[in-house]
Length: 331
Ligand SMILES: Nc1ncnc2c1ncn2[C@@H]1O[C@H](COP(=O)(O)OP(=O)(O)OP(=O)(O)O)[C@@H](O)[C@H]1O
Ligand SMILES: [Mg+2]
Image (tube, rainbow, N blue to C red; front, side, top):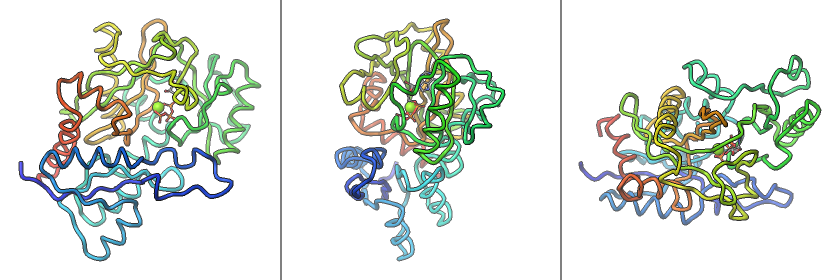
């Protein structure tokens, strides 16, 4: 295929210095310079030229000045609220510019965990029972089985998750949910906690051609039977978490996990690439937790491990993602 002139939209940590009083994790989702150059170099290895555009406001300025690209590789997280990831895709659609990754609607569906779970359930796929809580009255008729986990409905990067997030009584669940609502100014998702194993699965491609790649299994402090342990920022900082790929779990379970990942990716309308988080209960049943339509594509995350397990390279995998998008548009 011909080399392309690829625009690259992203939010770089360096573009957003923290102001006094900001939470230290305010911009945790944004990408490091290291990750950005790894992506640029990968796309260049496919023969493409890459033009770094940056965040949504730089994109707007350049579009208004008349600049255009063959395609835009978008990993911009955006700013403010649950439509933040939709900003760049909506603008690119307005200007009729082909882009890599999910459109504005799929970004919105997946960023709002409750909406994503409703879409998944509508397709008959398994996800833990939940309630979305904005006011205390949302907890009337509470019927979830304990323990439950309480998390912000519209955040990522484990924001709002700590050992207080698991609740074993109604009072604990209520207290934690109202705390999350106050702190993050958004609904809290109260969800049945799945005790057992955890996986994250990269999916690439589109529609019937979507493929779930080798699942990655999470180990915490050397165990894959996680029991009540779960993924938090503190666990990552302490190096307690390891990604295992190929995953040590049995083939039958891994096949079921891949099928669920692929089904949920299609259910929420992802395009080109995404990453699905799945927990497996003690009876071996997999459940969808959330879909990341903008997973971290850097070498520090799971994509290089997945590439290796798939018998390819990290650089080639990123070029494959770009190729899925150009096939959609025929560029
Ligand atoms: N229902 C659940 N049962 C068990 N563990 C859960 C559940 N929901 C969340 N977790 C744990 O909390 C972690 C973070 O939750 P989730 O993936 O929903 O949030 P996130 O902050 O968007 O994640 P990411 O860091 O992938 O962006 C999961 O990886 C898992 O370890
Ligand atoms: Mg997650």
